[in-house]
Amino acid sequence: MKSIDSWHEEEFRSQMITQVVEALGESADPATVARILAACTHAVEGFCTERLYACAAGCPHCCVLNVAVLLPEAMTIALWLGANLSGEELAGLQKRLAAHRSWARWMDDDERILKQMFCPLLDTYGGCSIHPVRPFACRAITSLDSQSCREAFFPAVTDEDRLVPADLFRKAVFDAAFTALASGLRQVGLDDRSIELGTGVLAFLEHPEFVERYLAGERLPRAIWL
Image (tube, helix red, strand yellow):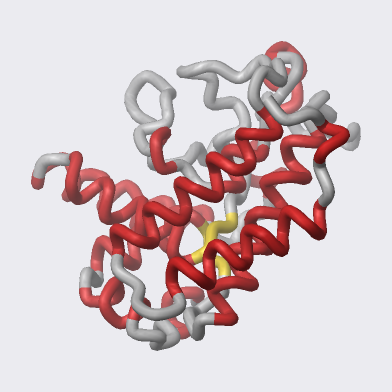
């Protein structure tokens, strides 16, 4: 376990950017993208191992929040789902993702909480169905008190701040990984834009050809974001 004292943001970001550029610079394929995402996650976890938090399987309180992902994250999640779900399960998921996109994509976090617009990637038990490949933004949020989560995400209209004690160091390291990955993508000529999690995953599920187009350096259609 690395200590918090060994964390130097600029050095960390520089090393991660170099890693991304070296991996994706000459040629990019889905397996390489998945591997670099896993390597980035492993690098972050090296600083965060054994840091205690209250989050546990089946605890979906914060899974109503907007989640921004980079396109390689959305692509990797979509491919993972395609490899791990049956055709019937995948068709059902796409319907849920499409419905969620229609209803929730323009909602802010307070409105999502009030209307309990949970992530469509949760399973029937409230667990994360994409946990092994969940994005940086989800990994970054860790609560230190589950009761505070239940209270903060209770669907009620309130003028009070919704406060949850969280591991801010973990969030800072994952945020640095996110920006480093974006910078590395930009340097190798890949689209570095972010997108809402469900919208991005659905785009790659509905349009499998986007994988090849993205990895070839094309910018995906603007209509996806509209």
